[in-house]
Length: 249
Image (tube, rainbow, N blue to C red; front, side, top):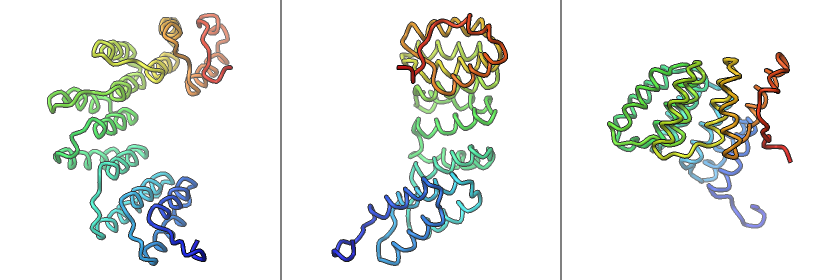
């Protein structure tokens, strides 16, 4: 490119950095960023957010704070994506206290009063077995002027299912529908996996019929659960209504 008098700009460097991060080559991505700075190209928020996401992806916990401080030292202002990356990363590695400390700090800022921000926290809490805290946040959403989205409901339903609270999961599903949200493949698959985990096959068949009637089908994760159950109890197949898997032609 240089031989042709074409010089890479920040967009070009960001594409390279993103590709390296997706391959888990974080050190190489950081070297590219240093190279771009040396060439007089200033990194932007996308550059920093991409590498930050990459650090969490490969589990380099501890390095993210140093990198974040470096970002701040340049005068770069972290945005919602930056902090969501921190929250998702902390929750991914079970660092719930760190995630909630950041959440409590950010919640007081008006720019973070969006349902997308709260979805990250509710989902992270549910995946870490902190259903009570997730429910408390879910229930206060109307009090701060926010309406749950389909993703919010799916996260809470998943939290109930992970705890084996299938009746509560079904009640939340109906509440979701009553409030005008369309259930989707994710919603039903989450509940079916809950039934499979708890070995409640008879109750599961009712939902499978409803799924089939609405055109829904198993996803790959649910299929994997079902295969394991059938291996232990082949008679389960006789109880399941005919459904087409997503990948079936």
